[in-house]
Length: 389
Ligand SMILES: *Cc1c(COP(=O)(O)O)cnc(C)c1O
Image (tube, rainbow, N blue to C red; front, side, top):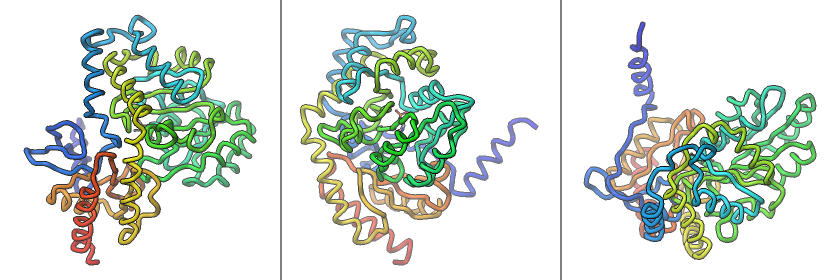
């Protein structure tokens, strides 16, 4: 016995159409990307506003490199804390309407670090079944009792809370926009139930930041819940087109996480230029809300067309799942689109539940109606061929 099992496991994944492999993008990330020397229309990134390749953002990063160099050299608490980390955190707090904020290198680390710092053995954490993997991993790693309720089922949430009186702390955590389904959590209801049971409320606003709310401030503002969420988590890796996660909340929470969140304490600070890019992204969307309007125009256009022939549930965000079912079916459809110049990788288990493999269509503000027409026409003809429609 050695590491031969690895080959066997890879083979098993391959046989089940579950093996994942990269494609390599040779261009910048945009609505159109280059792979193997050819252009593809991309409906597959989280770069909803096209900021990942925006001149203003690039300029901000370059200027920061000139002023501050590249690396941060140490963790924040040792000697890596720099002006731009501080400025970005102040900006996040202003943007999210909280007292303070804390940056983490990624959203994944933010969720794991925050959950592990706040709950442990003797506590209970309760979350939606379709929460992001980083939340699930944080819940598991925390050592707290971990319960899930069926997707968006607030009745079940309440019944779990009702039976949780024996625990020291209770924490309810949900995505605001679900990353693989694009639907939205019933936040006002969740908040009022959690409050009734005196539970801590944590909302992952990764896909709503830059997309929902006035000036893209996110789902909490959009739902009129400012001041009611204990822990707002977000990421710069989606609509802001950058990298880095954050928690926004009151000053005590932020001081606590600075001291207790291990993925914050024991890792090197983000390069300052990364913070400059994120800062420029936030500023840009505040000053140019028309960019967000353009994204929503595209969402409305797709919605008006898509429901005619797809059995997708509803379109509530730039994420539109086209559920195929089998992993093989999703891979085949993705390959057919690819042959026709469209990039939408298949999303398969364990990212989504078995039997719900899908193409996750994601829209950008920079797509044109023509681009969306091309996607829909190609989908129509390919699906007719594959599924005998
Ligand atoms: C992408 C995502 C994360 C992780 O963010 P990264 O910055 O990419 O690590 C966390 N939560 C949700 C809901 C996400 O979609």
